[in-house]
Image 1 (cartoon, helix red, strand yellow):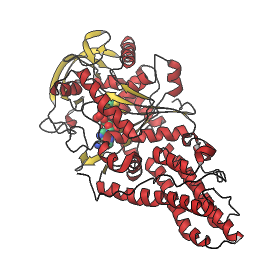
Image 2 (cartoon, rainbow, N blue to C red):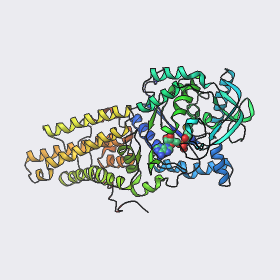
Image 3 (cartoon, rainbow, N blue to C red):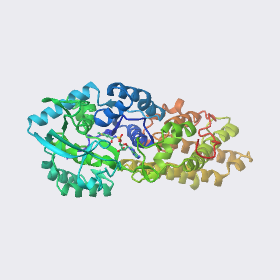
Image 4 (cartoon, rainbow, N blue to C red):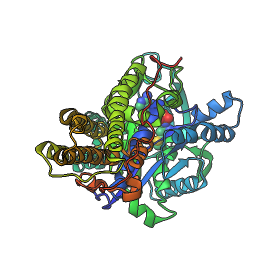
Length: 525
Ligand code: MSP
């Protein structure tokens, strides 16, 4: 298996069906990808972050019909009014927002399938089976209940009988098993990996890749009476955006991607997608990582579900930084969780307003009061000061390893724990008491304590930047770091823990309150 080209990081999310506005479930994957992209960028890597929308197929077509609109008009409006603004609201900045109706995607998808057809991987056949339009998937008997309802959507499947084109997926079982074996973290976490290994071992069937009963899709290049099955169109968004045929050099630079999703679409990404790539002679993705579901009433939150929560409802109260922090830190990346207003409110108050926000404002206030807002030069370090520098090194190192393992919650947690540690240090050192003594020795000690705190905050801004870019830029500014060290986004993570980076003499100002107190008791109505 080829390694990731060194220094490159290509991160992808599923492309979401444009049948309704996004909800916090779709935002969860996209936020995580944005955090990873920002972290890797701060490592100095060549990062490409891709997200977008899945616009073809029966599900989108029928939803548009119900809305009384043509499918193109329907998706154009939703993408413009809902999907792109939601990512802007959350400070999510992809390098490309791909749409499966984009011309370069359509063209490269046709070229891909034409190649597979020419190479003999596609044949014509008849198929009769149960189809779930919500999943856009043919279902086997173990995927429906006794009445033929889809187990995921709990809605009836449709029996479809058509003459279709088929991809010889059944020939890829051994190659896929070899891939899972050679790259043990290709599918993670382990439970998902085992499930797919068992599934592939049980035998793969060929895949119907075209549909003739409707035309909202990409035309089969060698048969214009059919459109490509929506999934084999959508799964090629990653190669289209990487410009597989349009710019092979760019493709070679960034391929293969790290892909995030939840388990609903794992088979598509860990079986069909790599098999298609292998058939065409391209490398499979680097890894596919399954995070948990956000649940409502114990079930996966879905667009078709009336209880879907729009990210705006939460951002309006807590802001985008706290939103990102809450979802990234409070839910182990890989576990299911239920969103709760009480929980986000508690995390906001305890971890952001009290722990981090208070630390930042206290330190700036004391440097203002005792040193006229000019960062003082530290004296000799005591053990207590040295322990803070050690704790920082530890946190930075562990966070970086956690990010490599896609344990985002742990990475954010290490920085949070470090903030708690610094608050403990202030409580122990009692700078307000030291300030009462104006002997040279006490002044020096006060300077050392406050330098230690400011320097710790400097590192916290760097480490938390990928999660809370707006609040951390404010903190960075208040430490006078923009003038002395340059933009926060340009600070390399590799030297985040280098003690003594914040220059003495920096102008420290109190700045805006990072996490203002929120008055509401619980959920907004
Ligand atoms: N269009 C397909 C994906 C094609 S990718 C080639 C699709 N779209 S979707 O809109 O249904 O998005 C599914 C994905 O959205 C999940 O795999 C996950 O990444 C995210 N989530 C949607 N609901 C979610 C939750 N309730 N919880 C966590 N993530 C969820 O499938």
